[in-house]
Length: 362
Image (cartoon, rainbow, N blue to C red; front, side, top):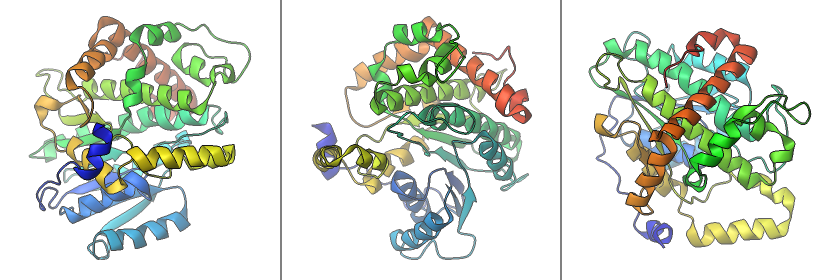
């Protein structure tokens, strides 16, 4: 019911100068939530907005749409910058992060980073790096990009008077898993066949035999992204004071009408009709959904590391989140996944290996 009500009573927009003179980065910013978020940043005073794209044609369409959504505010030269990023390629992630680190270098860097790029692959397919598409895009690639960007944001901290923000478009689907089953999957032994010889969470999710349907794949990979951001939130803290040097949050906008599930069309008209009905009844617009994303990068130190959403039972959500991330077993799962990400990075993106020491704090 709350999801339906949010269509008619969306999260309020902040004051018009909220992001005055800020430089904001939105991955996956050429459509849906990302494009709507980019438009909000511009309308709320951002000096420059950087969006990412894998497709040049899509970039042109996005720029035209931004002009409409911002009543021309996005038109001035350098107001919007498009950068190439393919989250299903570790090489692309590393190259992009290196370029992004040059933005306002020595002058405070990026004020706001929002990791919105994601995938819902409906069939089991491997990337060129050898990982299931959802797993690499939503989980491992997101963890790598977040760590690379955090490194540059922390270096810029002495050049800032306020804290920068990093946000992630998460999913309430992570609350459908128990920490016990995640802990069990983390103990998965290496497999000699299938899509991976790895064990652990990465091996479990990468195994085609563990791919019953795209819903499971999306949910588990977004859950792993939540664990990655929980680790990023810890790494963002000052080692002496424990205070965050970059404020990190994950959020869920709820059900939004976007084309993220466009690949489901290949499954037949019944699937298309089902999604259309589901979104038609419960889905809010991308503009409305992006308001939640906005709020998650307006948080203070006291909300650092929290999961932000504006629907559902808050007490129950807090209890479930505590078990998943703050319990001893939850911390064990987080550390296990982070070690696995580090193993992948050392193999596939060795230039970033120094950011994933084997004795990483958890």
